[in-house]
Amino acid sequence: MSRIRFSARSIDNAGTATTACAVLPLHAGAGLSGSARELDEACGGGISDALKLGDFSAKAGESLLLPGGGGARRILLLGCGEADKFDRAAARKLCDKAIQKVRATQAADALVYINQVKLKSQDLPVTLAYLAREFTAASYRYTATVSKPRPAGKLRRVVVAVPGSLPLRLAGRALAQGSAAGHGVNVAKDLANLPGNVCTPNYLAREARKFGRGNDKVSVQVLEEKKMRELGMGSLLSVSAGSREPAKLIVMQYSGGKRGEQPHVLVGKGITFDSGGISLKPGAKMDEMKFDMGGAASVFGALAAAVELKLPINIVGIVAAAENMPSGTATKPGDVVTSMSGKTIEILNTDAEGRLVLCDALTYAARYKPASIIDIATLTGACIVALGSHASGLFANKDELAEQLLAAGEEAHDRAWRLPLWDDYQSSLKSNFADMANIGGPGAGTITAACFLSRFCEDYNWAHLDIAGSAWDGAPKGATGRPVGLLTQYLVDRAGKTL
Image (cartoon, rainbow, N blue to C red; front, side):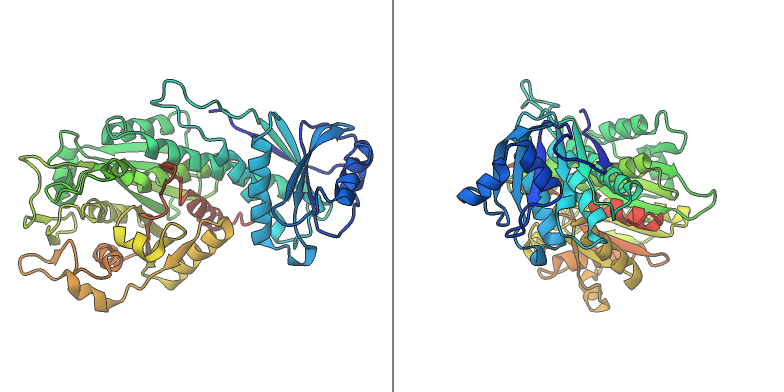
């Protein structure tokens, strides 16, 4: 898939700047000045005429496409509303409208006059990063199993005109970060959208090896079931027991930092299809369970972004990949398994399998002595009930880590909401026949799932992101690529590359 190229420029005269589509944001009642006045003169007063006639009033969300003039073949007017009410949230809406309207044209390139909006200086780089990420993400097309895929858009290049108060170097860095994050989002979407008969644990292992080729800072290791058995990963292997597809533990190491520097570890749930096992799911919408590897997909996406940005930190991505199927060899409700940590687990529900693969992956991750470890999983339907699709559920055993992730989510507008991890909930995991059960009672299912995972992360800084509501959309059906935006921003922050 071809990438859109982004660059930042200081425009001397908008009237002579060459572009297929000049995108001109205007504030209501502000009049025409700077680039807006220059474009108006170049198109023979078309912009001022539209304002005088009332065809365009610059209200927030309004748009009008005009014939071009000067170096611009067409001019897209976008309403920003009143300047004193224009904030970061309004800037995101402006970006969304710009992306929608530009992609509806046949323009191969666009010139966006961000220098026309009234934004606080600290909000400008964040807006540029968002613009590049969303332009890139909007270019995604699923093609893998479609004989006649929808045609890709024609847009190939976006130039952003920035005000003199923003150094071009900083503007370029913001655009590069957004572009890399957008690419990571698309990597995650492509993996998660694949059907379960294509995207198997073995397929994910092959994709990981492909990712590691040609980059001397990336190394890949794939643990087969024999090795997992030797390591005592009875919990993870209990999930793949009913499937013909062998489980894989995929480890991708990016060495961008100093040798010996503690890495940040991302652990993704990679259930490539979840039938529920013996605790079979209802048939309705079971096809969506191909998305149950959304956490694994986000690990691939975040690593792709980090490698592209050449972040000066060490990162380890771990994917616990398995298929959960019912058969004569499948794990049964009531079975007791022993995890890699030595803790025993009574499996009361085989459809609570994500935590079973994650707990062994989290135990394995301890060997890297991580600075932080974040697991990402489409873990519980209860999280959808609690938060819907707007926010990912966040748990952490350290307040500082939780605050860092919440801040990264706000910065990237890929938000999370922290839920409690109180000891009061731990008692619901009691079992008469093992150290713990794999499910709690009927209430607080998202929290008790996190409590289960917390028992395997007591010795390091750990956070859990439940993305059951945010990883895919139902209409139209497809993966969202979340929370790659949040994870990329978190890693950028840890690398000291904050915009």
